[in-house]
Length: 270
Image (cartoon, rainbow, N blue to C red; front, side):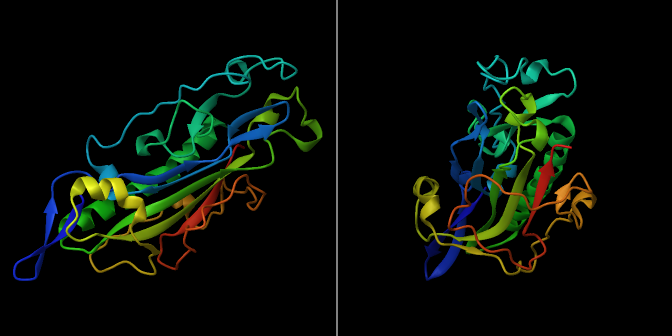
């Protein structure tokens, strides 16, 4: 569990551990995307993920339950079939911020339709984030530290739809799915408060000073980048990155540092 700094006598700092504190904070979703004849699918979402998320019992479910047109119902003036009826591709309601990390599954503000391969590529990126959180948690438990190490995790949907430009129209089902989602991640360092109760810390976590991480301290074992992501700007390999995306990143997202972890990647549908 995350530790808080307390000042002992005589002026001897010690650390207490009594409850999960740094789980997720500053979770924020953008408006539902405007696509063709309706508003459908997430535009953007961000959250700061903390080391306590890796503890048993701390990750939630928040499975995708959102319905409606054109996912499960016909859209007036829209495609002649829904995503769940598509005979060509298997579609999944994919979270921008994973439900295990606190992202909502009951609203399209945090869900987009992704085909199975894209969903698997997104899971590769999320596995890398989990590995970082595990490293952060081991560091937290391994000794005294005045800061927490977490991840600022940001996802934006492409402005361009999955449909071919010459076939994008109100009746094309693929016009209502993004061509890709862009994932941006930054290691962040959050200063621990001194002599503050655990309950107060959990409530006020978003107010504590946060900064970029130019380098990790001795003893912090940064995870190895998955082979599929090594040198890739987009997955699957061969896709060209750099298209326009919806929403804007929060103003306090740090610039990427040469720390061996910070990065970004696009997950393309095909």
